Length: 252
Ligand SMILES: Nc1ncnc2c1ncn2[C@@H]1O[C@H](COP(=O)(O)OP(=O)(O)O)[C@@H](O)[C@H]1O
Ligand SMILES: [Mg+2]
Image 1: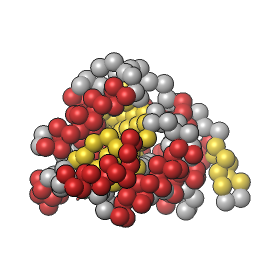
Image 2: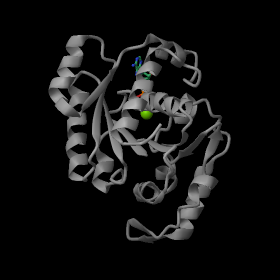
Image 3: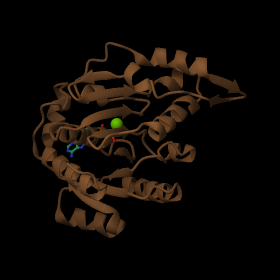
Image 4: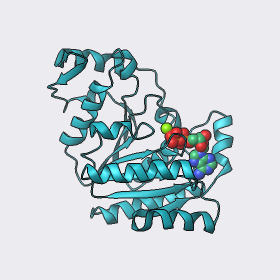
């Protein structure tokens, strides 16, 4: 299954993406994690040393296969070989980082968006494989339909106005793109009242709530990732993993 995680900046996309990756790994899935945020954090959270830089090579490949027409790239990429060549690996996990192509590419956001869309379109997965994309914050990429090929979109929101408004926009845009399964997740939900607000706002799209856990802050301060984190939020991630498997009609 192919899943993307969206939402306003700072709502917890990368944290929840990481925990969901860990929950899928625990169930024996192979996971391809794609960090599509221009300011990537997944490698750090997954405690994968970023000593190799696949991006430069990917740029070469893009340059090989891309033609710049005016300010835009038209790509005719055969990118089914990208995952093997451009991923960092750790156990059953492979990580691909797209983020920095934007600056390396001289300001045009098109190549990596096109690569990502095509990857999501053409990757063929077995039932025990998952692709999980940690998207750029906000709604900009919806204009380029980057996430249109996913099986499910997870929209993260905190129980406050700003992120709720962004989440609503995302839900609307993703419906316009024809994404059928759009699920909203609350993060840093501190009370039943806050959860009621979110359920009221998103109705049937609302899937579950992640509470606040101060351990995340402690880990941030100590520069630790989440690889061995098994606190309360991991339980929620396990529940989310189960729900996704059920909702997307996969066998565990
Ligand atoms: N449920 C939570 N409890 C406590 N801290 C959290 C929680 N979710 C996220 N955080 C913290 O909030 C900050 C932003 O989270 P992050 O996952 O990087 O958000 P995003 O990827 O959406 O920008 C991080 O410092 C993270 O540790
Ligand atoms: Mg992030």
